[in-house]
Every structure is written in structure tokens, then in C-alpha cells.
Length: 441
Image (cartoon, rainbow, N blue to C red; front, top):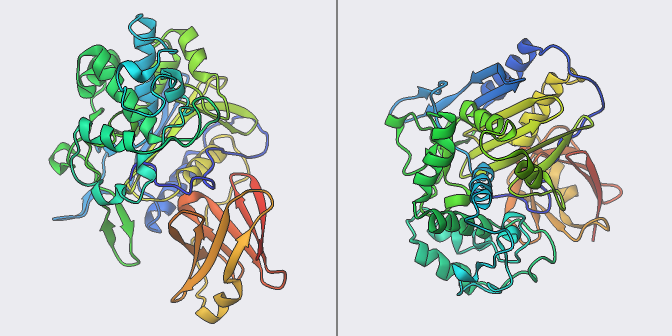
């Protein structure tokens, strides 16, 4: 699934105290990536660009495990999931600059069968304010995600779903929006998305490792995605790339992604005034990019999730810093970038400790129950499966909680920490600098 998240829990924010950038501590950054790899958490590719110059680039882990283990290299390519949305938005804004598309154009000219088509605009798609239901959020999606779908078939699926809210009423992330924007790029340019990507992004920046994905092919230096099962890496399901389109079908690596972001912010892809439009966020999201604060500074970019792949791309305009990450395990991108940026800005930062205490079901049973918070409408049900504590948010799948102590548990994939107080029948949820108190019902 491209962007399989705890939708109300995973926050695209990075936070730390205030300081100024210092000389990059490369050994500590190496130690972070090495620790993530040796503890079977994260592997992939990281690139940092400062003032237009690459100041750090490293690739760790495996690209493939079968028929033999194949180490990843600088040439390895990864699926980047929803980072594709930033690329799609850039192409849409190029068409706006060329007078071939208007932001206030209703989508009824292309998709009259969709709900509220006459009132949903291109800009609302870009900003996730259309109200169109995200088809990837449905249980049925899991049944067909690995099978090819035609545009007509996907439009039928999208048209059948009632809208979640009135156009423009609020922000709500929906993959439907960007699949449709990818189709609009095709209709306006009279080219396939792959051809438009090649002409409008790849050729302009002379990229070598960025393209529209297809079936993963090791001969093309493409990585598969994996999840550690305790003793070995399990290959993750592979989304058929006919489905995500402009929402998540791009393949790239950290070096190329960094060049895309550098090209965007240096005027090589869109005009400065257009970039300003893209950066004008509402509810944290602009035209294809998020505003992501860290250390008192603003950065703009996007995260990506598809299957077991993770990606993060962000740019700090004031510091002229670009950070690009592509990975092929489900470890939290937020946690990776939190470490990377803490090290870059010379903040106090301890490398993660992945040693976990062994707890029995008897140790975990006092935490079982259904919890609610006055700070958010989400409820979380806590259960025990074997010797594993499990959490399940309303309307979402169950997730395993890894013990850090007898009362503290984490879910790294979402950057989530839960501290239990059995006597008070509560837990404190911490994520991305935010704290929420939950009480057992």
C-alpha cells in the first residue's frame, strides 16, 4: 500500500531545541546508519546537499536477498512512494505556468463521473482539500493492490465512493487526489506519465536513476523491500505500479531526489513565484509539499511510503540544505531524519538503543484495555498476543509495540512511544514532539 499509516497518529513534523548548524559530524552520522543496519531496522540511501554541494552520501544494507544477498550501492534504485506527489505537483505547476492548466479549473472536464466533479478544482486536489475518498484506505484495496488496474477500472472504483466532505471544507490526505492529478498531466500533455516525467524533470536535470516504476527488476539495480522477522529479511508485497501513478509510482534514489529538490528551489523546474505558491501551506500542506519544522527552522518536502519502502525529501531554504532518504524497510523515516538532522545541527543526540527487555504475557496483561483521550477523537485498543503487546487505533490495523522498559513501548514505523501507568490505568502517547494522555475506559 502506498502510504500505509496510522493516519491520525503519524505526524509529518520534526522537532528539537534551537541551535545553529555546525561542521557535519560525519563519524556520528555513519554510526547512526551503521546502527540502524546492524540492528535490522533501516537500510537504504542518504544524501545531504549544502549550498549545492554534496556533503554526505552513503548507502547501507541489501537491495535483494534472493537468489543471493545483494548489497545496495549508490546505483541502487528504490520506490519512493508519496514523494512522487511532489514531483507530480511540480509538473502540474509547469503546465499552469505554460497556460495549459488553471488551478481553479473544475475536474468535471476530465472526470465527470466523480462525486462533486463540477465543484472540485485542480488546486483542491493538490492541497488534499477535494473531499474525494482515498481508495487506498478501503479494505478492498488490499485485495487488488498487487494486480494491474486500468485507468478506467480505477476511476470506477473512485467514482463509487461517496465523498468524505464538501470540496474545500478541510484538509484530508487522499491518494485519490494525486492519482487523478497524474491522469490530468497525461491528458493535458498527451503523453504518458512516464514520458512527461522524463521530459519535464529527468531530462531537465540530467538524472539517471529516476523513472516511472514497473515490476521490480534486480537487473536494473532496483531494490525490493523487506521486514525483519527476527532471524531474516522477509520480502514485502509488491504494489502493481499501474495503480499509484502520480501518487506513488516513481522510482529513484537519494542522490537523484536531492537533485530534484535542488532543481526545484534553484528555479530549474518552476519559476520562483510558482515555488512560493507551492510553499503556501494550509493545515501544513501546500501545493504538493508539506511544511516540516525542525530546530526552529522551516523546511519543505514530502514523505513517502509504499510496501516496505520509506522515503523522505526536504529542503531548508534559509540553510540551503537538502536532505534525501530512500529506504527499503518499514522503519520510521521520521526517526531516521530526526537523528540525521540532530547530528547535522550538532544537537545533543544519543544513538538509538535497540536492546529490548524480555516481557511475559503476565507482565503485559495489566496494560490491556480500550483507551480514549480528551485531546483527540481516536481510541486505541491494547491487547496481548503471545508475549507481544499490540495496539489498534479506531478503524486501523493492529500494530506491535516493542518494549524499551517494563512500562515504555515504541512503534518505530510511526515514531510512536507509549508510557503506561498501570496503577492509574493510563498511558502517555508521545510522537513528533506532541504528547497525549489516554485513559482506560
